Image 1: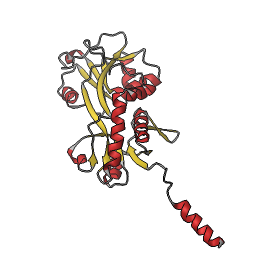
Image 2: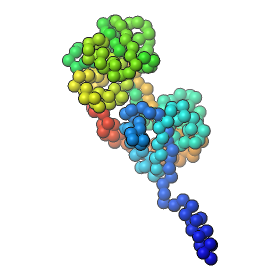
Image 3: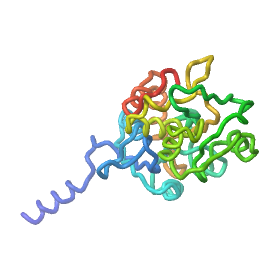
Image 4: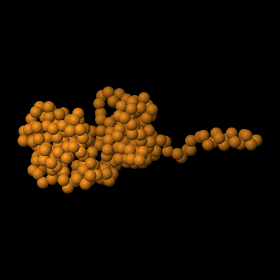
Length: 259
């Protein structure tokens, strides 16, 4: 009798709780401040945004930061439910469900030393006046790439990281440097450099001039039931519309208002 009771208890405990939320495995790459590990835990503004949308949809987020190829491969094989910070292309669309909700638009802007009048027109018409810093091997979008390779700048200086670009800027060795808005702003904020380095603003709008942009998404595996895709996308759309996403981003970086 005792053995029977124990056996029943084991079976009962092995059953999932009816009220327990289903866990969604979601992959991404290490890309601060969007997603990175802090004391072994995934953090970042996209981690927070995606986690909140998933919870509001009634699921539990299990976010895993892994190398980018693995992030995509696990979703393609159906071993993970979704991936975020993924750009759209036709090959990925074969195994990923994309919504019309842009998770984030990655923007390439130009930075200058505070107090200088260095300015780069969006059409690069005054590029010949400027010495520009770039990251070695970094792709800044078609327009910027063409301008760099076309030799229209006074001089282009390559460095291995944003830290070196900032040091050269502050020493007056370059006039401006290109950078991905969110990571550079995070670096400036963390290192108390916001009073020394600023983004070049559009004179008409007062927000940073964008020389290139790339939309990224929270995309779900086509090998999974579309139910979670529809429910999470619905919550994400609400968060984008009511300004919740912007509030989360501003916890990490002092984003320009209206940008």
